Length: 445
View (cartoon, rainbow, N blue to C red):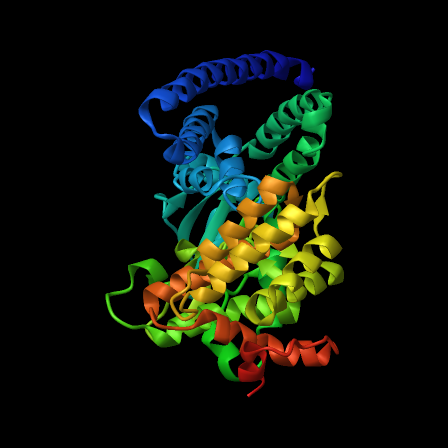
C-alpha cells in the first residue's frame, strides 16, 4: 500500500525530469547554433563546453538534492568531462533550506532510542550547515564536550533510490545505441549513484573517520593532521555525533605564506594515495580547517575510496612516468593500464604524447600547474577514447586539489620534486624500477 501511494509522486518527478531534459535539449540546440555565429572556430569548443556546463547546473539545481549531489560527484571526473564543464559543476551548491528542529529531534530519538535531553545537554535548534543529504547542529554532551550532530534528511535515501532507478533506466536505454554503449553510460552512472547512496548511511562516514584515525596514528609530521573524534555511543545510520571543529578554513586563511599548512595538506594526500590506499575523495578547501596550533583538521569523509592494490600500482607507475620518466614511458603506461576502445590510433597518440611531453619538459617545473598538466592528459585521453579507471581519476583530482591549495599557501613550492621525493622510498619498498633521469637522481638524493 505504501509503495502504491508513492507512485503519483514518482510519476510527477519523472515528468519533471523529462521536461527538464526536453527544455535543456532545446536550449542546447539553439545555444550550439549561436556559437557558430558568435565565436571563431578556435574558441568554439570552449564556448560549447561552458554552455553544456551551465545547462547541467541549471537542470540539476531544478531537479533537487540527488541531482545536485550527482553533479558534485561528476565534477571529480575530468576524464569524462571537459575543464569548462567541470568548472561549472564545481559551482553547484547544495545549501538547501533546513528541515525543522522537530524532525531533527524525531530522527535522533528514533535512531538512538533515547530522548534528546538524555543524549545531549545542549542541542542548538539552528543548524550550522544544511546540505542536500544531511544537516549539522552544534551540541554539547553531558560531560561538557562540544560536538557536531549530523542528521540525515528524512526520506533522503528513498529519494536517492527513486532518482537512481530513473537515471539507470535512462542509461540502459541510451546503451542500446552501439556508439553510446562503447562509453559505458550504465557503468559510469552507477558509480555516481553508488557514491551518493553511500552518503545516506552515516555509519559509513563514522567508519571512515575511524580508519583515518588509525592510518594517521603515527609519529612525526602525521601529528599535524587530524580528524574529528567520533562519539560512538551517539551514532547510527541516520545520526553521526563527532567532535566540533573550531578553526579557519584553508581558503579563508589570511594572506601570506603558510608553509607548514601547505606541507600538511600535501603530505596528507601523498600518504592517503601511496601508503594507505584509502583516499578522501571529496577533499577541497571547505573540508579542511586550521586550528590555532596550525594543526590541519579534515572533515566530511562520507565519500572515500579504498584503492585496490592494482590501482595503487597503476597510480605509482603513472606518477613515476610524470615526475621522473620519459615520454615513451607514458604511452607504455596507457597501453598497459588504462581502459581504451578498439581501434585506438596508437601512432597518432604517441605523436601527440611526444608533443605534450616536449611542451611539459620545456616549462619551468617549479611553476608548472599540476592541474593543467593532468587536464591536458585527460583531453588527450578523451580525444583517443583512452581513460584511466575511475579510482585513479579520483586520485588525480585529489592531487590537483593538493597542489592548488599549496600554490595559494606556498606559491614557490616545486610539487613535482616533493612528489618524487615522497614516492622514492615507496618504489624501493615495492622493488619498482626507478628511471634513470635527472629528476629521479635528484629525488634519490
